[in-house]
Image (tube, rainbow, N blue to C red; front, side, top):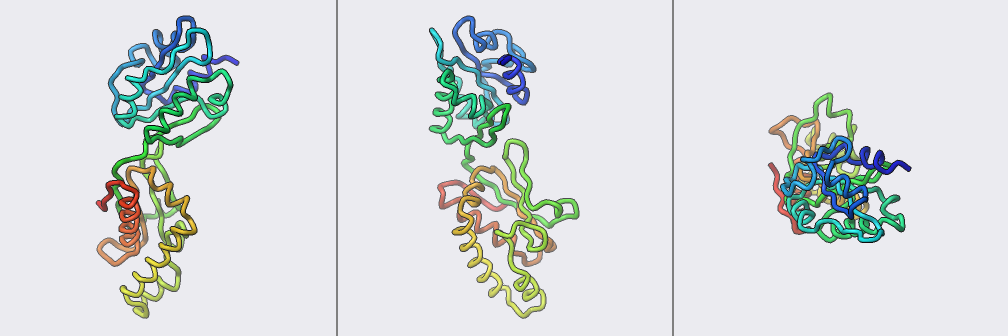
Length: 251
């Protein structure tokens, strides 16, 4: 396998690289010259912000091998930058002790593997604050049940019974009931909150996935300024996030 080409493909989504290795290794070469689209002045910068996507190259089990530069890795993790490294298949190779050490450090510092494919794994830090927003669906957004941004920072949720995610939607009987005034807003609210408590039990893993996003937008067909379950769901999310120890608010 041409590992330098593999690494060039792996790091092409990055704007910075952290690389350290014993002389003669690929990681040593990258630390001096960069790799692919990563130029030499983008390597081991020592300055990182949350919007950075930082590739990591590190030695495996070889004579004189060097572990990742922990001082710089700590700066990356403190900033909350996205990290790109070997995928799980390559990380599991007996030789790749350095890759496994990086994974261990990321997990210890509140990171999770957001994406794992044949080219790379992408790691994101769980946010400390989550902003929840609500909006009216448009013809364009109504086409999606949900949509996430690159690297999973933002999540859009269509919460309608007509075209959205059923785990967050009311029933048709509830919608028609409140529209025809056969169901009061208080009755609707009580029914919907009971449904969300059941949804949390049944779809617990999906609810936990929400903790990975910095901003969540909930949409429904109801006009702005009118009673809508999307506002109830936003409050449910905030209560859930707060119980998990996060700062959360409706914006």
